Amino acid sequence: MAEVTEVIELKFTPPVSVQRYKAVKNMVKKLQPKKVLDMGCGECCLLRQLKHNDSIEQLTGVDVDGDVLQAHRYLAKPLTWEYLNPRSHPFIVSLYQGSIGEKDSRMLGYDLVLCVEIIEHLYPDTLAAVPEVMFGFMRPQTVVFTTPNADFNVLFPDFQGFRHWDHKFEWSREEFRSWGNQVASDYGYTVTYEGIGAGPPGTEHLGCCTQMAVFTCKSPPKEGSRQHDCSGETPYNLICEVKYPHRAITTTPEEQILKEATFYLRRLCHTARQGHSEGENGGSDNLRSDDGTLKEIEETEEERMVSVSLETLMKFSCLRRVCPSVEKLREVLTSCESMSVSEDGESVLCSIEDHASESGNQSDASSTSETEAQVYERSDSKESDLLSWQQQEESWDW
Image (cartoon, rainbow, N blue to C red; front, side, top):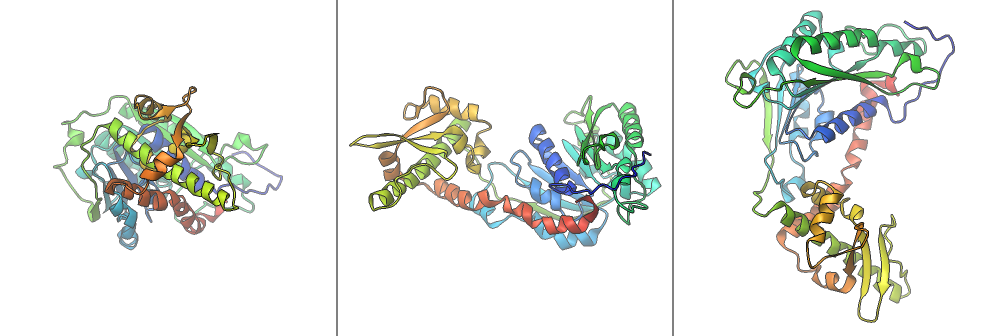
């Protein structure tokens, strides 16, 4: 292991624990899995964040500590706004008490399995069972492992032992790669590695604070195969299973996109109209929103026009749920005769008066969207609620 004689002040911004979860969430966003399993979920911190990913239809957490799961099972339940704005597809959150070293047929058929900071807590016999259970029996499409990088420990001042009292070992990058490469070779997976939580300049040779391996199955099991047969042994103890409210969709995807886009255009134009009224009464006559995305482009005696960028519309989560990209939104709006898309295709032109006059006549679904827009879009604050827990979990990784 490399030695560092100079004392270096370590400060991670954001904390490494936050960076780990961000890396995992980016992986989920990229892969768009339907069934996700968090092995070693603990206090359900990661599950709480993944609940808001719209691609997931089944989200499962497994941990060996049943008391911890019982204490945090409330996090599996829907929030109030999730009843007001049901999902467009079924969604189930389940928590199980069980060991990563045991086979349970209910864990078959998952697209993505996350093992975040778990293997370093395992005793040798359990660790030895992981490859066969995870890659031989369960055989998910993608498996993600993260674990501390022991090479990095020399940067912690007066450091001895391991980073956490419950760690049974900590692997160097070479040891982690040796384990990962062997597993990939034995079970028909490819594997890539990356670091999370870079150190100060001049310490690049030590790698990052956390190391991550992403395993991808070369030939994932097909529907009807053994990996999808859930009739076998079930040693895990079910703590809770929550089925979220959802509504059946009877309209086409394009109709859903147009409906949501129209609703938010009306909202924005109504806001712009209110701003103009304040201007006539001595207030500001600026139709630009706080972030500069709503802009007045034309004014006549008959009507006032505004331009709303497609990027602005995509900031609304209800629209993002039904529309995968700005490109798709542009395609739908361009094909609609009642919509006027700019020549560069980057924005849509709206009459304040036309849309504002319709703002009071929304359907129940649109009212739901408005409620969701007011509540759900503040969900980023939930991540700040997790900060104190993350500080207590691993104070060393700041």
